[in-house]
Length: 188
Image 1 (cartoon, rainbow, N blue to C red):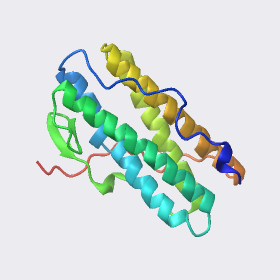
Image 2: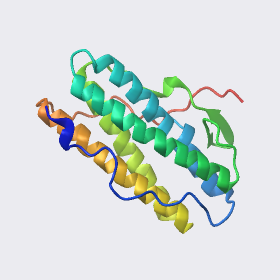
Image 3: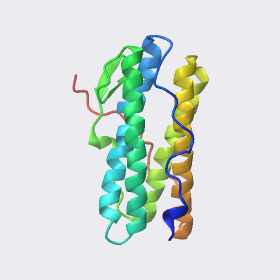
Image 4: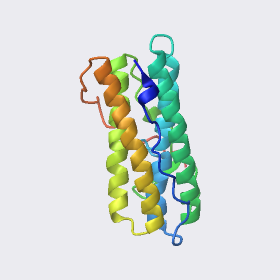
């Protein structure tokens, strides 16, 4: 397996992190990108775990997870800055049904078989893409939309990588066991 052909981050520069002004609705959406179960924090923690457990038998796949997690950490940082500028506290939490919910590791599924592990990662990337595209459609702040679209470019590369790895291992994509968009226990 040759991972040197993979690009883990799009070649275009990230737009500056700025906003037209404070906006509670946009801030709530961006918080979901930070601390919901379908968030960058979930991706970072899952890919860290996946990198550890694949290292012994699938070194190249472990390296892919490591490199993708670094990109996801950058996204987490960008969304944190956006949340601040939009007027909210960028804790690892999200707003859902009128309440704040802290992110928790229970958001992750932890498959250990390589096919399920890659399929789960792919499903998370596809969910993130759907969410970011939807946000980009309704958010009117051009700065926030530009950032979302740039992050979408990275997530599309990650989808390509996970699909390529599944193909390389001659494993079909299977449906994930369940959606990652669950609610963690309320700790507020």
